[in-house]
Length: 262
Image (cartoon, rainbow, N blue to C red):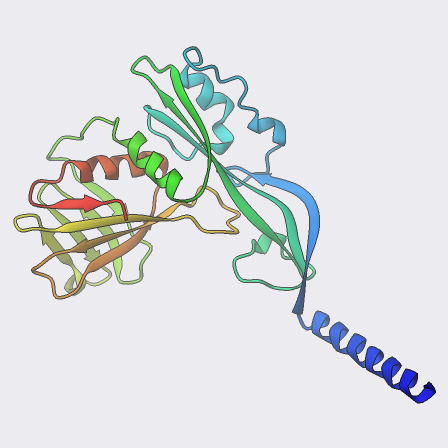
């Protein structure tokens, strides 16, 4: 019995040393509770009291009051609605570095997990709140953003929308009256897709998990055109105002071009 106990004790010691060595090299990760932190769209930390939405009374509260009191979470919303977004963290990991964690909180072998939240407030023609939705990232948020954006007035046909791209291949996306242009890092990479023949445009969001910067909401615009050998697509990030302009543009594409939300 004694030799067996010694053997078990040796195994435990070896296992403990092995685990400690993994922890020191950052290969072992433990989840842990952390003090709650909240970040708004200004990248500054905010308090829980800054997320008090009880002052919003449907049929009474004006948009300018909402904009003033919730400026810290404003995504850059158009006049017709307010899109508030913030990131909250109360958990993290110790013992290693994990892809996607906020580098600013990854000190001493620790890192935070962030989760984004949203609030949508719709206003009537007089700028009075008529609808309020607290909503998580996902398909439902995307469908509501599309629906809210469709209340915006259409821009003049001669006005183009220029969107900086986050891709290495394309610098900019230009939404014009009769075409979509992908401007490359080099002139030879420029691509123009005209709407004179059928074109199917897809716009889809990327609501990233563990995102410590809630102001960064990114999308992929993809054009499937019969004249193109391959699909053309580019990624970009946009504010609430810019997103609403893009959706309004897509809603007014000249036939036979059309678009889909995903």
